[in-house]
Length: 198
Length: 226
Image 1 (cartoon, rainbow over the protein chains, first blue to last red):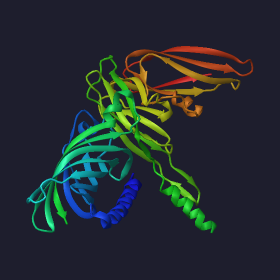
Image 2: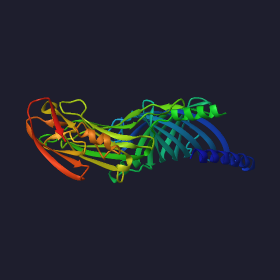
Image 3: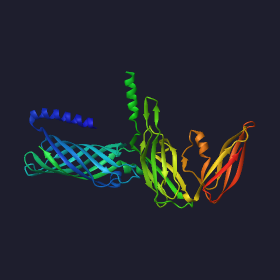
Image 4: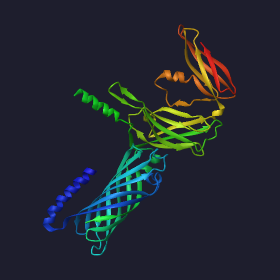
């Protein structure tokens, strides 16, 4: 998945440069955002019932391309959850969730001090489980979601950044029929606060 | 060059530890009852994955490793369910341990591996625990008096248990044979001991039986002359 994201960035960059010269419609617009993210996991599943709420993590988001009001970005997020239910999931201490996403946003009201970027996101997710230094394997899957970024311009360079979103996760765990849905589906609401650098 | 290769091989094995497949979850279920068949509720059951040490003298040494992978608590019916990530191939056995610290005797179910699971599930069945104070140690001493006779096996009829139960017979029959010569037996009962002996000169197998009165003693020795 990481390979595909890299190739997409590369391809998009070339497209941007070539089209930038031609009609200035697709532009390379690098913007970096760094933020803390907090998830509340919902429903009857392993992430929600098997872990302590709430989960705190960090993310790095890079806006790459802009076409009129549409923006393309990529995001890496790492969230750590403390395992609460040892019976269903094993004697495991914590779960690290690594997420790589591509994000397609639409920018609203750019002239104002407050800017909204509603978006759709899709990517890959990797759950890594540990007890102390002992690694107990990983679970891979995909995630899709929607939400909105809210920006408050502090000055030309720094922008206060917040995000509210809904995320759905699909995993590929093989287990009994009793637990397959419990491990393979999850959803979360996220709230993010950070800083964007132009 | 050879030395470097050996060193690399040694380092490779040193770094080997039990690995797990996080995308395959194994489910273990079972039930725990007391000696009077009432369910034992709110008791901890643990699951360990163990690997024995291995070595090639002067080349490498991999120490033994035991991972405490699963734990569960029995419900009001004595039932428990544990879900664990599947251990990969570099391990020897899965061990389920019931009740290591309580008024009841410890029970370990050993010699389990991931091939024993059917559709990712293994039902251990019902395990019965006795109060420690109600149990005595019975030791069977074998005394061969006729060189032609060979002791084959022994069975017990009555209330008895073991701290260790093998989920499937051990490949090493020698350990299984001697393991059967000591039991935890319930005090104040009449226990029937049956054993088989083969006469190697005639190839005839004979079965013997004896009634043993178990009283309040903590330790009982019983000698079988054959």
